[in-house]
Image (tube, rainbow, N blue to C red; front, side, top):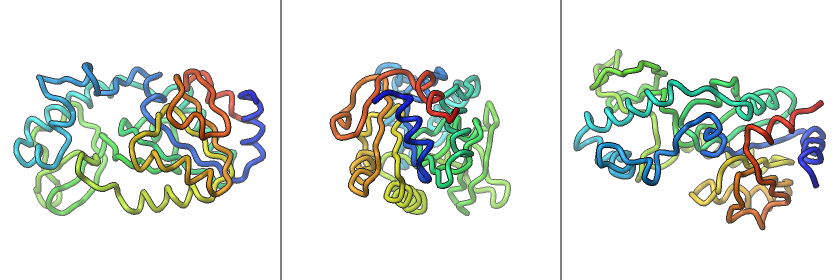
Length: 239
């Protein structure tokens, strides 16, 4: 089966769900913030992206997130992001689940999506819970809520925190009801994303994996194709 066969399969489907990860944004030059490139002032992400770190030193956490926002502010959606936004218009029941927090999917025009790990361009009040978009670069440190003056935090799911239940419910519904699950740019080894392919396949979906390298799920899916997301995903758009 070729990428064009997958395109035809998607074109015939009424329900398509897409899962994306860091690989799709890598083609926009977005760093992973993990491994050696994840070091910042001798800190690793695991030392900063937690409620405990924020409670202990919100300034250093916000300085790190401001640095990340400054890097991301120079990045644009690539052809893969744009193709998925366009695909949304062609499928009757479409849902996009992303593990990325960079905001490139909504920037490309995607509207039917769950950002299950949050969005770095949103802030949440630690006092009243209000969530608002914020694209300030640099952001004021420390930022405070316009409504109640409470301290704002990044609207990101940190280590030790649970994912939003509404996002999870919407994601699982989309996975269980889709005819095709398209997995793009993720190894799918971190839960709950690690369970997504098995869930969709169990409920009868045709599962496609597009990734730069084989993953632990490559033997489970119906077809796995290696390559860059920006090259492969646009080929899935209907002619």
